[in-house]
Amino acid sequence: MTPSGQSEPATLGPIGAHDAARSGADAIPPAESKRRAVDLGFRFALLFCLFLAALLLVVLLIDVFEAGVGSISWEFITNFGSSSADKAGIKAGIYGTLLLMVVCAVFIVPVGVASAIYLEEYADGNRWWNKLIEVNIQNLAAVPSIVYGILGLAFLVRGPLSLGTVVLAGGLTLGLLVLPVVIIAGREAIRAVPPSIREGSMALGATQWQTIWKQVLPASIPGIATGVILALSRAIGETAPLIVVGAATFVAFDPDFFSQFTALPIQIFDWISRPPNEANNFRPLAAAAIVILMAMLLLMNGVAIWLRNRYEQKW
Image (cartoon, rainbow, N blue to C red; front, side, top):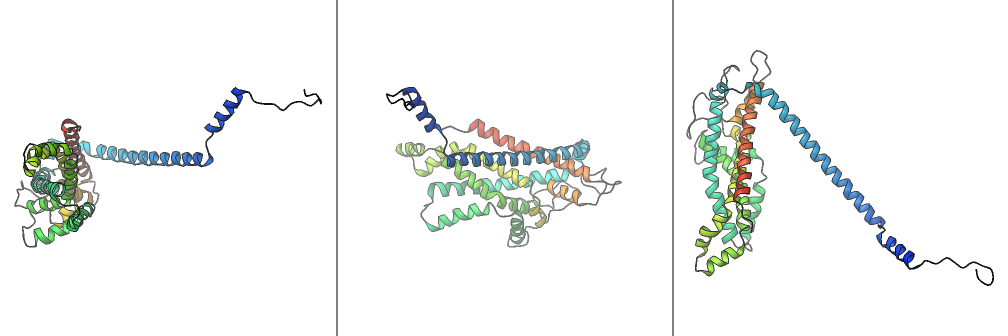
């Protein structure tokens, strides 16, 4: 109490003042609180979209597996195509698919790796034509596959080469489709090699090509191999380019590189497009072929992941 009888105003002690100051400093500003709420909502929306996409994929895979697993048998794998669902098989489709992958790999590996080496080790990034090449490679990776089918039809099947509707033309068309993917993957693998490797090799008297051949390329092989396998995984499931270049829906012989051919995606497309018929239903056969094709894709992707994890170097 003061002498006049009035009470003194309350004051904060040292501890109370410190707590008040700390609580004021820890208070979240309204703008920051709003930003956190928006960030949380956006994260929840992304997780929901991911969950929805994964759920739809799982449901689709289960449906295809249940419909097709009962039709998978040794006869189904070793028989040729037939107008009767009881006798139809995918032997010609498997042969054709494997031959297409061989032609595609023989084409994309040397061309893709050589292009990646040139763009990363020799090309001057300030030159306008090199910039144009890089931009076009990025754009070609996003071109619809049917455009490559038209290109293959114009230049490989009927054009200057006039190969006809054979395995070689189909494989080269698929190679053109996935070549940008191999170039991009090869460039990333070569770019990942530390500059100190190149500098150390040249300091010992090696030429630029010797450095690339003996040091850079061996160190980047795991990344290049992974890119090649993933590119082949994309090519193995393509249907539109093969339809355009004239792949057959029915082949009753083992194809070779210069013969008419079919492939698993073509057979699947043919069987699914047929009208349902209880007496001669090809839908279970199409589902079984899809299961086998997915198994091949999973095997190739698994090999790519194993190569990356087994041989990738940590710099």
